Image (cartoon, rainbow, N blue to C red; front, side):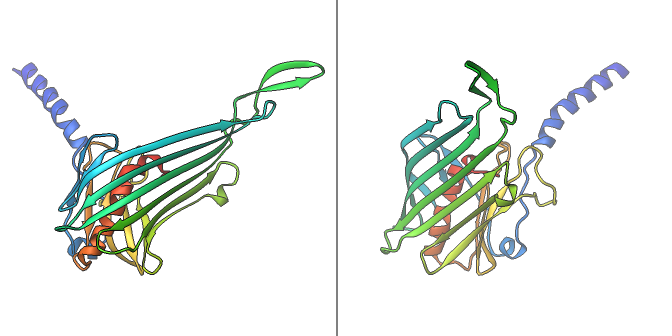
Length: 260
């Protein structure tokens, strides 16, 4: 009987432990936003690009456009430069006849030191190992132009990051959405609501600020066991909700290609 009890305990642990490890988590959310909004669960669908739906906001079209990659380096130089460009477009519907169209351009420029390089010394040609092949410099620019069927205003979604292993003091990352008059700054959320950061990655979501006040947020962890959510404050009108829902869709689509 004792052996059976031990066996059942082991089975119970094996069943319960994975559930506990993957239990649904929520990111740290601004208290005012938590009171004045509700979490909208996000559903994704496949295609040439993933389509993200939440609440009344549905992605009716998501097309990956052309992608080009170029790489060049001088024959006897250890530095290799590369550039990748990607185009895509998304159409989202909102409340009633509201529709938003997004034209997206992602540009990534990298400069890194190759591990091996051709060396000529005393009439001798040889492959030599670079002393520090870890050096890298990278710039990522994501630009999305958002228009709606309501007016002719163009909203610009900008996400820029610069990182260097040599000059870490020059590393920076910022994102915002603006029409030239109104601006929403986008800031990263790096902890769950219990105050603890994730184990294997650093960003669990983003918040949208207008004049220092949080008006929207989205949860988008890299952990596929955790669900995605969007929050839009009730104080926003339907037009601004559509703009921020559209910007959220861009972040869902490209977070994995952007730095932590």
